[in-house]
Image 1: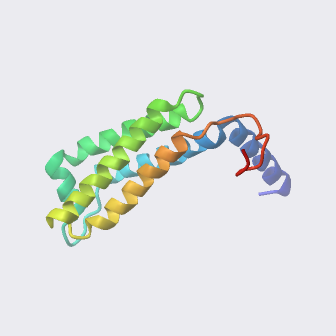
Image 2: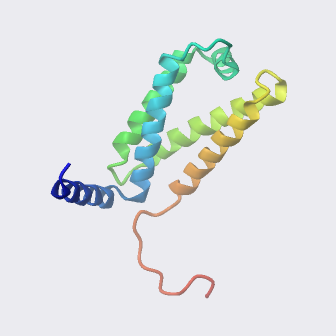
Length: 150
């Protein structure tokens, strides 16, 4: 790739980032992660041992149902990343990640998935991160006073 091509690519990426903003960029990330999870549930890898997390999730709903939920969430996030109104995307992504976190944590507590506390902590943390980002204003006036002074 030539240097001029890289410069053009960077310029276009900056323009897109300004258009999408912090919230939209976060939704693009969450949308891509959700799409990967959906795909992984449609075609789970064949391991030599059972996947306890998948077994736990399948006891609640078939993995294909979970895949559809993740795919819908991915679509909503990827579309709403380009709009000012993005509440539905943040709500869907937050609800699904928190639900997964609680399911994994419940599996650890009941002994169904002893290592589920790890996934539970990750998913609950991710849901908390989404909740935090959903409260950020995309644009706002510059602060008139330094932080800590009132």
